[in-house]
Amino acid sequence: MSMLITNIGELMTQDAEATVLRDAALVLEGERVSWIGPAARAPAADEAYDAGGRAGLPGWVDSHTHLVFAGDRTAEFEARMAGESYAAGGIAVTVDATRAAGDYDLTRLLLARVAEAAAGGTTYLETKTGYGLDVAQEARSARIAAGVVDEVTFLGAHLVPAGRDADEYTELVCGPMLDAVLPYVRWADVFCEEGAFTAEQSRRVLAACAAAGLGLRVHGNQLGPGAGVALAAEFGAASVDHVNHLSDDDVDALAGTWSADGATPGTVATCLPACDLSTRQPFPPARLLLDEGVQLALASNCNPGTSYTTSMGFCVATAVLQMGLTIHEAVRAATYGGAVALRRHTGDDVEGRRAVGSLAVGHRADLQLLNAPSATHLAYRPGMPLVHAVWKAGNRVR
Ligand SMILES: N=CN[C@@H](CCC(=O)O)C(=O)O
Ligand SMILES: [Zn+2]
Image: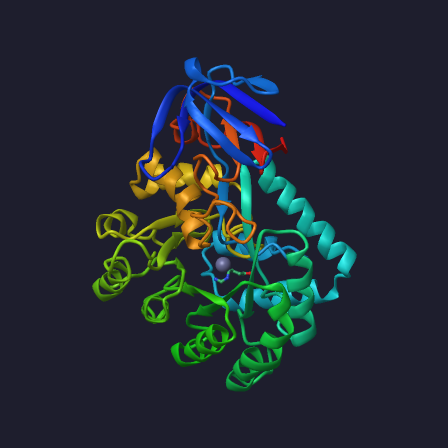
């Protein structure tokens, strides 16, 4: 079954040439894109959909979320707005609520958040464990996540549970906990920060998880300077996320991962602007990183502590309004950039998977249409519900 989507006023493909087409059309065939070009030259298809001059762009790739949780941290948020600083310890409140929730409730909460993300244009989603923090609970979170989202990340190293010795807990993460989650996860992550895991503990987690065959990601340099970025570069992590407090050496280390042959991607710098607003952290030096050749991603970091939103449109608007990115750079980071951060940016049915985050022939048919003539409206009209229609793997989901 093929579907022609025609009369697209502006189509931001985010393909290799970052092509922007006017008066464009594309054909979806099954789960893939089979044709893109000027509407006037579009081929016939089984069905047609008139986009009415609206803007089209790839569905968002949200490469950093923490969606498997129960409970609420409104009181912590209110205290922060009254002047308190964010501290990693707040995670423990969510751990208690998550452990107390049954599988049915935890799954229902996760599904509701994923549906909310899809309604906002997100078509590819990563989520992390990290609110279980014992072997059985981390395995449960990973299992539930694997049944719902596209990519699952093991974040046993999110916080040392109260009363536990940090080094002993790190050993647990690197041994029995890792073994228990392995069937469900593709990635591992560590919160390398004051109050969470030291550089040495983070190193042990990254080494063990890499040895187990997992791809690596790091929460780094969120609340102050630290070793997260340097470790991510050293271990060849696919992404280091937050990156708010970078030294010149950190920027050089990240840039160095991108300078080799251009064919193998380096460590993506994933910026989380909604989190930065909610925690009142300085925004990452996104312009500098781009100028140094580092691939950026933008992600929601949806979680109950620091960023309780799935809105990628809000993140794009903030990146333009506050971080100095152009609309094209911000959309690229929220689509193609997220796909690179998840190493899903290439491939035409590789391992049964297609490239996401860009629109090109053979890529997965993940498309959103905006109730606007151009993607610029995402920042020009911030906070407006601009998503008109969404296709995920060729299926209309909104
Ligand atoms: N920084 C670590 N983890 C989350 C926050 C988790 C929480 O506070 O519950 C983040 O990415 O911001
Ligand atoms: Zn996070």
